[in-house]
Image 1: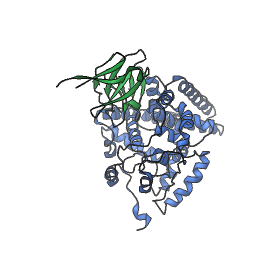
Image 2: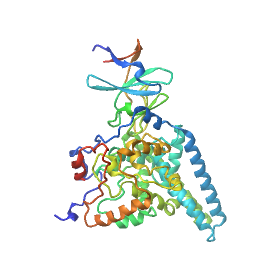
Image 3: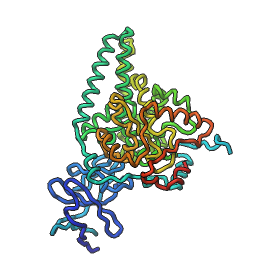
Image 4: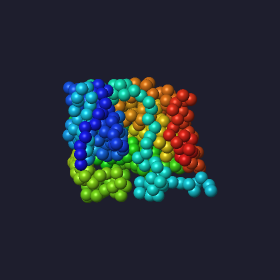
Amino acid sequence: MSETWIDAGAADRISPQDVAPFEHDGRQYAIYRTADGRYFATDGVCTHEYAELADGYVEGTIIECPMHNGRFDFTTGEAKGAPACVNLETFPVKVEGGRILLKVA
Amino acid sequence: MTAALVRRDYSLVGPEAEKAAEAGLVSAKWYSPSISRAELKALMRRDDQPAIRDTLIWFAALIVSGSLGFVFWGSWAAVPFFLIYGVLYGSASDSRWHECGHRTAFKTQWMNDAVYQIACFMILREPEIWRWSHTRHHTDTIIVGRDPEIIQPRPPDLVAMALSVFALKQGAAAFRKLVIHAGGRLTDEEMTFVPESERRKVYGVARIWLAVFAAVIAACVATRSILPAMFVGLPTFYGGWLTYYFGITQHLGLAEDVTDHRLNSRTIYMNPIFRFIYWNMNYHVEHHLFPLIPYHALPKLHQAIKADCPPPYRSTIAAYREIIPVLARQLSDPTYFVRRELPQRARPAPGGVAAVARA
């Protein structure tokens, strides 16, 4: 299966220590920007129950789900606190020319 | 058909669970007010300071009232001190359980977890069971057959309500379940919301708690006095009345089976002492709409979205002026409930009138 880098919008659309949604090919992603300017991407929906992580809260490298406060480390996808028990899928992301590029399968 | 014939089954493993699923009420999309990301982000910001301050005051008040109760034990002078100690132990623990369970009270997570464990013990709610039950309460708030935290069915059980004033009904159920869990089992209902991976924690905590209660009983026997239990165990009961007084106001008498927290929850203005004990859970509509927002930011959230919400109740007494007649009427008409009116400029409830009418 080929892998493609997708343009996920302007890098500055996400403020430091925040998250924004991105949808591609019917799938939702969450793209994160850390306080020190690094970018990460995960599945956009919580693994516990349906909730869009882009509505959640970013603290350090943790994203908290907006519905039940389940916690994930968005740099690895690891579930860090109940009710999140299943890890999130992560995706490679880079910034080039002020644009966020997301590598999807 | 008379109203009495439409009594519903509130268990999580009965026919109402299937009906809720068929009606699309399970894990449904709920109403959410419009608020800018920047404003929401500011409101969600975590801060240790308010909760550390409040926790130090709470523990200090427990120590002072408990010490004076000890000093005056054996005389009537001990009564007011144990009344205060009991409320701080058996009622203030409810809101600490709640906020720390959401992990929003403190910025530092171990502080949330530590206070959560202490508060759970005080209010006799097993930490893992209640974490998952409360998760379900937020997914399916007051959806019959799904929400394990519906405080009263329709029609209300007045005997159960009377027993609950001093946590007798909840306490009896809690000890029965502790024994079940200590034996390495869950109830059928609990199995619907506690994942397999978390069940061992339930069994371990139940065994520790039973050991603590056994130690308290042993201390009472050894000293030939109930004084040890007045500090650990009994305050859940003699001090639990205020948490029930507050808890009734959250949802009781409002719509069931609607996907809009503005229609099934109450926001009530409270005095500063009540708000300290309740940690701003009186902003209950706001809390359900945005569970990520810490208790200390709920008054600001209330201001930000109040144009989109029904008017708040002016006091707990105002709320009870509504609740008591509703409960009285539900005794003969279980379909009756209070329809909260949204402001004219508010965005409509999902499903419109139909969603409300189904309740």
